[in-house]
Structure formats: C-alpha cells, structure tokens
Amino acid sequence: MRLFDRNHRLAIIAILTLVAVLAGCGPNKAVLRKQAEAGRELAEAYMEEGKNRQALRELLKAEKFHDQDSLLYNDLGLVYLALGEPEKAVEPFQKALALNPDFSAAINNQGTAYLALGEWKKARVLFERLSQDLVYATPHLPLHNLGYVAYNLGDYEEALKRYQEALDYRPDFAQSWRGMGRAYMAMGRYSEALHALQKALEFAPNFTEVYLDLAEAYQSVGRRMDALDALDEVIRKLPDSPLAREAERKRTELGF
Image (cartoon, rainbow, N blue to C red; front, side, top):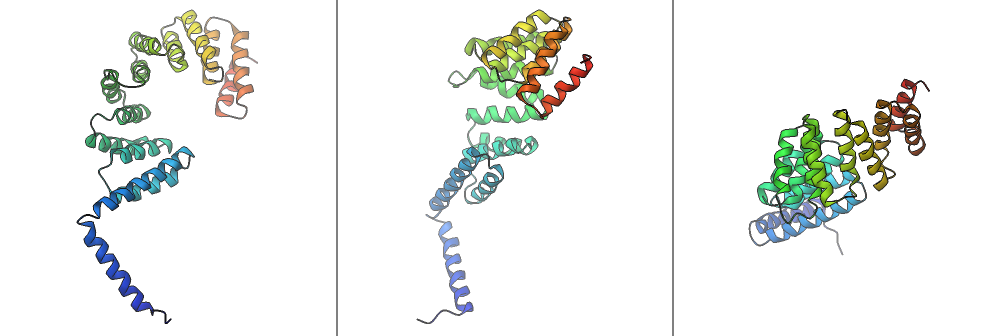
C-alpha cells in the first residue's frame, strides 16, 4: 500500500483539527469536560506522590479544556502551596469559590494561603466563616487557625480561647496544645506553657518543633538542664536539619 506523502498527511491533520474545533462548539464540549476531569485525576495522583511539578502541568492543561471546575482550581491552589508559592495559590482558590461559594475545603485552603503570606485579617475572615459551618467535618481546624491568627496579631487571650475551642473538639490535637504553650509563653505564664507543651508531646512525641519551645520555656524558669535535654532531643531526632542547627545555636547560648 502506498504511503501518503507529507503534504497529504498534513492536509488530513488540518481537516481533522477543523472537525474537532467545530465539534467543540456543540456536543463535544462534554468530551472536553471528560478530558479535563481525566487530567485533574492524573494531577491528583501526582500530588499524592509528591510530584507537584507534574501535577501543575496536568492541571494547567486540563484548565484549557474546562475552566468551570471548582475541584480543578482547588487542586491548582494546593499545588502552588506545596511548591511554596502561596501568592500564586490565592487566585485559584478564589476561582474555586466563585464557582462554588460553599466549597469548605477551598475556604480553608485559601485561608491557609493567607496565613503563609502573613495576611492575618484576610485569613481570619475565612476561618470565622468556616467555624460557623455546622456540617464541616473537621471543626477543630478553623478554630485552631483562628487561634494562630490571634497569636500573630498579639491577641493572646483570644488565641487561648480559640485553641481551647479546637481542643474541645479534638483533645489530642497537638498543634493546638503547642499553640497554647506559645501563647502562654508570650504572656509570661511559663508553668502553664510547660504544661501545654508537654501535652503536645504526649499526643505527638515526634513533634520536634515543640522541643525547641519547651527548651525556651525551661530556660525562662531557670531549668537549664531540662532546657538542654529538650535541645538534645531535637538534635537526636533530626540530625543535620535546620531544627538541629537551631538547637545547636541555643545550646551554645546556654553555655554548653
């Protein structure tokens, strides 16, 4: 059988492309939507594997086929967050919420982007909204985030209140125990800080950052050897890490 020459093949490709474009104006939109959904699902598989660059590429391709998918935009925002680019994450989350104003996950994720940017008041609006959602599956998370916002705004009493509300839902939530400990330290209430930080480690023994907080609290009440033990625990758990280097620096400040 004789092969088509190059010009013949190009002509056929051009005709098929025209047909596809014309079909896209009618029923084929459903096909494009399915193609976009398949791209999003592939991106989500990449995200689960931590392959965020590949996920980003697939999501941007999928957006060209179907730009009315709130799940796609939420994923896109999450990928930007995972890549350490929260400034790029805000817009996709906004698009997700424009398409689905009650999309709780996107509300939380946009708030998280604002936290990463230090936009405390913008984050607070979103987490307040989410904390009033009676059917939200993890109510302790927006409450914890409201505590974190209050802490960063210097309102330590409000921070303690919000962290406690989070713990009312999840008594084992180590993040909120740590938050309470840090708020108590900022207020000079070191015995209460020590209790809260020890509770955080009770529920999450490998929460290494807490040992640095614990060392600071011990040092503040003159318990230098306990502070040293906490710093050594950081070095033991995460050698050759930025946290370990911070522990070494604090160790030197203690005179060891």
